[in-house]
Amino acid sequence: MKTALLTCTGGRPETFALAEIWISRQTVEPDFWVVVDDVDPPTELNMNQILVRPEPLWARGKGHTLNRNLVAGLEKIKEVGADLVMIVEDDDWYSPEYIERMREWFLGGEIQIAGERDTLYYHVGCRQWRQNWHPGHASLCSVSFHIDIIDKIISIAESCRGTGIDFAIFRNPWPKHAIKLLESNLCVGIKGAPCFRLGIGSGHRRIPHSGVPDPDLSYLRILIGDDAELYAPFFKPEDFQAPVSARREQQPRQRRRMLQGKALEIANARRRRR
Image (cartoon, rainbow, N blue to C red; front, side, top):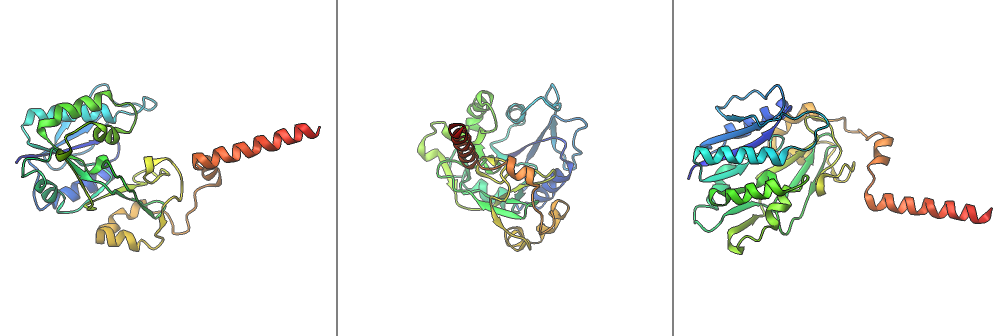
């Protein structure tokens, strides 16, 4: 079974270099690694990857290009003749056994799409982690699928608007026996690298401090061992706090609405007193 990895990247050489480390030590090597990069200059590749450069290239203010880039990468994979496609995101951590253990689910011939259901996220800037519980889908970073459904995945990506491509894939009415949602954590979703952005899972809304604190990085070391040190350039100090303006700006939607409602009540009461 020939395996092709697909990574969409652009302007993030620091994290892509880490992705090359994770793939270089896999117990089962991929047959192909297709990298889609729509940023100029392109990321340096060091493992004989197949580079795809979709046009037009991304430019600041031009919006989200992930879905387009996925389509470009999947079209290239159709050309190279793989049997299995695995999404590898450029900023996430992968166990050395990731490819081997994901491949095993497809050897029987029934499973068409698989992924890790209960995604574990770690924000290296805020030193926080969060376990998401997805009863019906897997995050894109851990999705693998058989080549037989590649055209359907392409169609879903072409019609998807916004960043919820993983939800769109699993909303498709696949045969029940064709889906395998795993409870493993062979992949850890890393947030806050290379640029510091607030948000950790749950749609990645930019809400600071929404995870479990890990100030001494002990839990990160439990998750990924000595690899934790490779994320050191992205760590913020243990006592780091998001700026007050950012915390106010990124309050959860429900709390923001509640505060706005209270402010309106106070304003109306003042008008009545006049």
